[in-house]
Length: 283
Length: 283
Image 1 (cartoon, one colour):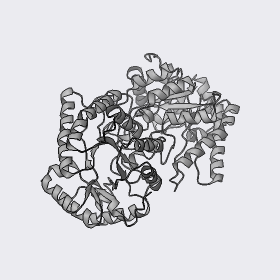
Image 2: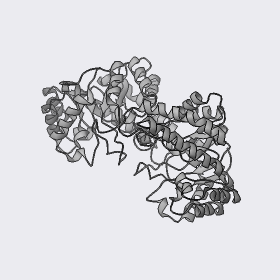
Image 3: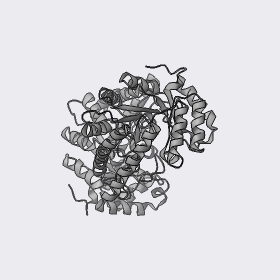
Image 4: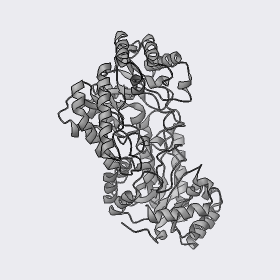
């Protein structure tokens, strides 16, 4: 297991951690100045600015783009909408390539409005990913399926365990092309009784494309926006990173914290400082 | 699959559904008067009154006690506390027998305060259940392990999937004594990609002791107290009950809704009426 002390070059900041309160170019500068080696920006902030300029800025600062966030949701009530969703992701993959992203983060989407058919939504996800794989290869940007915590199964992602994500990878990309894998997020996966076995399987298949950290607060007050800073919750982060790295992960450790009432109210540089400190001591 | 139309005798009300706003004896009368065949009371309301009297009242009204809620949490920071937890459950099993409960509902507990060791907490759960099995047999009340939604892994239950519950059953009670099984709750399990396979396995082993329904609201606002009335959410309740019954479940269908801001504010008789209507039409 790598020692992160003095190795912020192995650490990345997902821009959501700072609450998207400032223009992306300013956020990029802050992250680089704080010494981090990577960044993971979001589409809405990239698409509202000059992407070529953003790409140049990131490159000039020597930052690795650990992931581009994130896919349009795939499941849809109509075939036309499904196709539109797939096409939106194809367009985003081009931007991910422009940014030099290590992967395109796939938050696959929940049940279509009004649907109770979870197997059908999951089938649409497999289908959509199969349709995106060639585009991913064309642009040279791997798709990283991110299983989300089961509490998001209705509205954000019908993909809820690492085992389930790996099953889709095997079905869609049995030859392990290098363009389909998983993003493992401690927050979403920590509770899973099969997690460590799934991590080993992901490693054996060479599918680990990203590793995200934050913490699960014992007294979580909001389903979406009350994630904790590493060390403030109950996740065994060193154990988890150890497992991921023993399984072969060599990428950066990315911090992604949604925290409306706490961290998003703090000064961005202070948040980055706390992230840096915690990454080097409790992750 | 059974047709529940006109069959409220096959349906049960967990008293939490009415918000525990009235004395238990009044709640029992309401549930019987509304035509339900079963009730599932909670320890705090039973233990604060004359249990023998409550048992007589339930029996006189012909209600089945579909479950006694619920176990003291098992995992503990010290051996002494763990033993105290096991003993608290032994005492509750005696009361479950007095009530003639079909099962004792085991919500196994989360991580001990300050702990990040999920495997250790899970091992304590297995250990505690093994220690309770003989008492359960002595009192003639089966233990029903209830896997809770993964969003409760930190503070309420480190048992989070049906497969995991069945694994403990197999380890602790390989001979399928009839005194260890599972409670399947639609709210906790609906998202699980392995759910239907696990239900079949539970049926093959004769382990299905209880089946609980409510609904998952797409816009869930609270992790604990915002469960939906059947039909108001996204769970495929007919599909799930069909699977449970095909696997051999012949017990009652129990409604358990925690809903602080909505159903717990409504008139209890009205809530029972809506439960009855939804059970017969959308479950």
